[in-house]
Structures are given as structure tokens and as C-alpha cells.
Length: 198
Image 1 (spheres, rainbow, N blue to C red):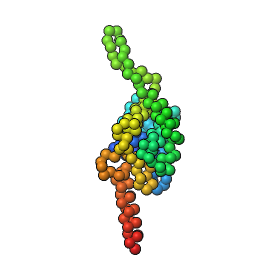
Image 2: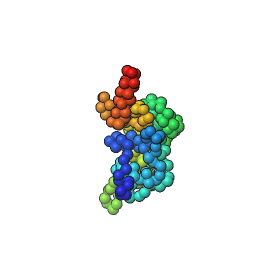
Image 3: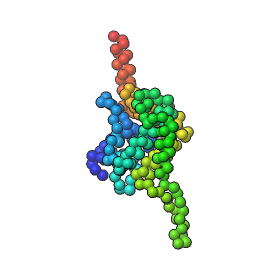
């Protein structure tokens, strides 16, 4: 793997695949950033999340699929969490279109089959999709489980100033996507307290 790619940092590395895909849109003081700007970015992200791409680099069409899936999952996460932030409202159109986009992506999962070779049965899979499209289908499948399953009520939008990320609430006291956001909120509260005491 390219050294520049291997040293690249991705947002929220401990989160589930759907959250990690959504976190390829992030913000800092310079504005909102998109970590999936090129096909090479998608290849690097797939490697970072340990999704098999069968040694292939992503194509422009696969990048478009990944971005459409990411935007759809962000839109559905905004719906599930009641997120009204500007960054959430700008994600992939309406909820119905987002549902269609996720379902279209998951349709690329290889279907299990059984085949007879001579007198021996063996498990196979049928798929005319590339390894990268199949990997994105896996992310779509996990997105369906997260957004429509019992864990959906643990999905949260991070409301730290300037943050556009989502996270799964893994601890009852967790309020922010990261320690950095929590520290930023605490520092802002302290600053406001000191300023109002003057």
C-alpha cells in the first residue's frame, strides 16, 4: 500500500461501517470536507475499513455509487435522529430517494448458491458485480441493519459546534462523536462562563 495512503487518518475509526462511511463528510474551521473526492480516495477508504477489493482500484462509477450510498445513509441517519442541521438537510434529497439508493446498493450483494461439480456439492455465490461494488453492498447491508434495526435508537448526531458527524451511543453518558468534540464544547462553555462573570 502507498505510504501516503497508509498514513492517512479517517474520522471515527472505532465506529461501525455505516458511520465510518458517513464520516467521510466532516467539518473543521476551514469548512466541510469530503474524503471521497476521487476514486483513489475510495480505494484508500476500503482498505482502511478492511473491505476486500480483490486488488482492484476503484473506478469513477464505483466512486459515484459510494458517494450516492454515503449521502443516502447520511440522509436516513438525519431522519432517524431528527437531525435538522444544515449539513444534514443537504444530504441526498428526500427520505424515499435515500431508501431507494440504499436498496439499490444492497442489491449488489453476492447471492449464495449451491453448485454440483461432478458428484460434489459446493457453495458458490452469484454476482456480476465487482469486488468494490460488492464491498459497498456490504456497507449498505450494515446500514440497513443499523438504521432499521434495534440499534437505530442509539444513533446520534453530534451537536458540537461545527460538527457534521454521527455516532452510535455506546455509553449512557456519551454525548459527542469524539473526545475532540467534547473538549471543544467544554472549552466553549468555560469561555462563556468566564466571559459572563466579567
